[in-house]
Image 1 (cartoon, rainbow over the protein chains, first blue to last red):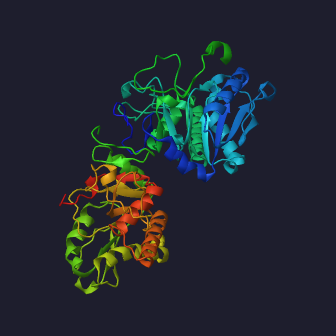
Image 2: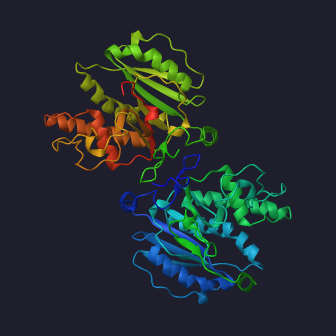
Image 3: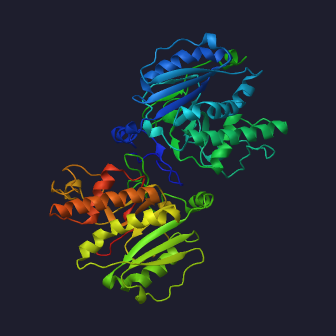
Length: 273
Length: 249
């Protein structure tokens, strides 16, 4: 039981922290359902160098005991390393176009995920998580994360007042959130849910991204801004604490008992060019 | 709320005043155009409670949303005209009475499952069974809507597991092994999606019938069977004892 943090949102969605759940009870409820969990991750350009560590750590910590399909979107299939997976777990390469800038690649993720769900993954998985590739799993990520619509709290903003959330503040953008509004600042590096729900919200986000493009504007934090706008009006049914989306450069505060998934230190300048 | 448990170990929210914002929930609920049903029984002398229950429920239960009240009674003529809110409907359904109140109580599970199958599944999305001998004094709103919902009994809220009123005799289908059990749920207020309530009422009635054939009756009648069911089919949402407070406690 956690009394030091908020564990339920005002719309009664659980916020997942270590100490709020019992893994055995959850496993006994979910394992018999024979679910397949999908993971999408984009490894475009120099980002392919992160695939090995991502997959190896996922094999150790992500949904152990469940069937998992990893969908790695890349423009560079030859550079993807061969990682040994456990039984019941598959790895699929999804070819992807390379866009001229990292922002454009980032913004096209919603469209790519949506298209892939429609063409392929809706038949193959029950739940889908969309994760950043330049990350590593350090501790268990299990069925406590499964829900209809799942978002994660951004590690840099879980303890700051709403006025400091980096929402898109220009009213000309479709991702605009006015001052005084907003529940949390969700990170774009982790989101997911039932595959049909992910299909719906990736489509909506892609539409708002295209609207901005037509109006010659790009939101402050690319698709993360659009995701935040969407989750304000269509609240997630489950929220993951920053244990599930951590940034190793930050010192660990007392509320974070366990880091499960965290950024790999990277030289942004070098890999984004 | 830091003074109470607001989340079960299987991540079902426990609804207490102060844990939710009804405006946000209403906005979500409105988007979905849902109909909720309430099943209640007024058999024999319980006709006395009809007016109090119906007038308070009509005013406070899911106010502003479409509610179908299904009132089962052995005495339909006794029911005077009840003024209903424009979004609500009242259906009076005649039932047989039994000589023993325990039998009346246990037959409710059977009646509910049969009517879900023949009628309710076509009329409502969510269904709640509520005892008629209550009056609502405060709004009960969409915070109760979820797939499978149990209410923590006010009698048992602070009791430790060993003293909870589970059936322990292994000859009964409602038996819960010693040391097990999450919460003690009241049979006076439970519900969920119409599909889940169907499964629950079928399973409970099956347990009641098997016990009857074996010459045993569970300690707290269908409530014992309900507790067994909810132990092995965990509710997706729990209502705190605020939602059904027995005045005698």
